Amino acid sequence: MPTIQQDIDERTNLTSSNKLELLLFRLGEDANLGRSELFGINVFKIREIIPMPTITAMAGSSPHMMGVVDLRGQIIPVIDMAAVAGCTPKTGLNILLITEYARTTQAFAVESVEDIVRLDWRQVLSAEGNAADGMVTSIARLDGENSDRLAQVLDVETILRRVMPPTESASDDSGQTPQVEIRPGTLILAADDSVIARTMIEQGLEAMGLPYIMCKTGKEAWTQLQSIASQEEAEGRTVQDRVALVLTDLEMPEMDGFTLTRNIKQEPRFNSIPVVIHSSLTGNANEAHVRKVGADAYVAKFVAEDLANALRQALSTVH
Image 1: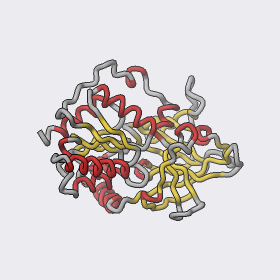
Image 2 (image 1 turned 90 degrees about the vertical axis):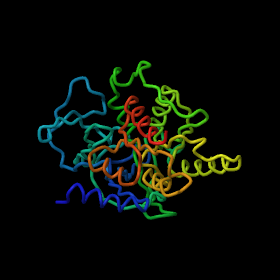
Image 3 (image 1 turned 135 degrees about the vertical axis):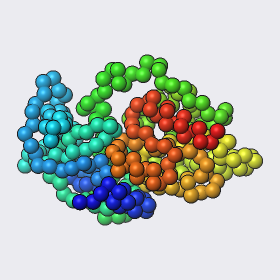
Image 4 (image 1 turned 180 degrees about the vertical axis):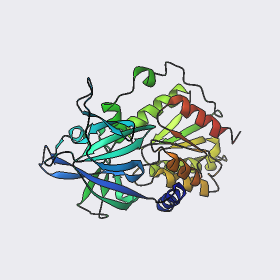
């Protein structure tokens, strides 16, 4: 069995070339076309895959919650992913995907698991503007360009917020978010592909009193950073006179957060800019892996106070 260190090293090798592994699964027939489409989730999120166990229904749970399972002494909520996606499984929900996501563990009930594929992030395109209700964050072209075999990468952040919304005390900071100071005239350059994640980040940064530019992908953030650098240099300044810190998600189409971080840290003009990775990919292996790519700090989504502390810590290295 591979050790945590071997796992970290393998994932480092994978992301050093802007690649990801996607677990492909099916949820049943689509209500509109009557076809069983492919869906995907980053393997990094998967803790284990098990046959469907006995589920205990919970009183008062949401319609998309099937109940809970007892997995080796841990009570884990089970989400009916077919119902969430509007699909009808023909053979039943047979598999549970046990996932670690944003400090929580939950299980996704699916009809079948198809394969694990290794893709370049450039094969994964943003689905924003094409996906109903923000449920799909990106589309993976499984056979490269001009592929007609597509997989929908679900926006798990949005799904979890809708199916298991946080309690009022967890979601309402009531003005208690600590302020973070940056040099006058500078801003935070942020990137996240999830609609709901961007909204929450924007709310958090505004509560901290921080100006920002928000991007939808790592590629967009990288282009924006280069553009800012050119503008500042044309006026006799450096990019650090404008960008105080880069805040990035990990999983993004076209260019992921690992590649964005590595590009920044390998470019002499940019490498003194602190990079904070703000991700729902939690767990010891993932956090250690983040450190390997050169990020200045890592913080799990979505607690504004934790984010503020991580930003403050990263900014202290340049003051």
